[in-house]
Image (cartoon, rainbow, N blue to C red):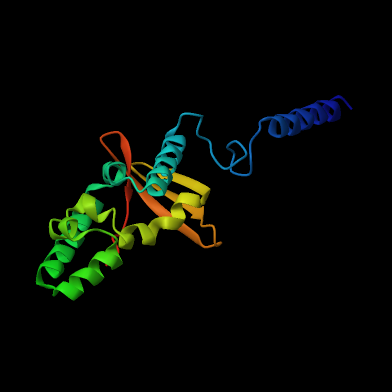
Amino acid sequence: MANTTVRAWWALLLVLGIGCSGGGPSGGPTGGSSAPPGSEQKAVMDAFAALQSALKAGDADKLWAMLDADSQDEAERAAKAIQAAYAKASAEEKAEQEKALGLPGAELAGLTGKGFLKTKRFLGKYDEIAESKVEKVSPQGDKATVNYVEPDGDHEKLTFVRHEGQWKVSLRMPK
């Protein structure tokens, strides 16, 4: 009888210990993250929120500072391609390019990577991020994935990379 009572107490303690630990199925806290506030997950979420704000404002300077080096290089290449096409274009074609890209001719003639971030081409590709809702943030070392839902219901994701202690977004430049 004493053995049964001891076993019952151990079983009860075990059940109470598991039930009160706050652990989810993965053993971590419920809510999908074992990271404390102020963690990498929060830092990535803050970087995503800053991206949303900069896109909403169309702030090329802030966007440029948020891009990883590969994305900046890609923006420079896209700008050079537009610049070259604009230089070869007829007056009518230049007017069409100005309208399509949303920038005046003087800017297109000397377009830089940072300037490319002000074009309708770039802003149009990423316009839905500004109003999107984060579903999940998954930091893994110096990389993180942000899964989000666009206002039209599309499920998308972005990759962030840590560079010199800051989270930078990796964006593909539209062609």
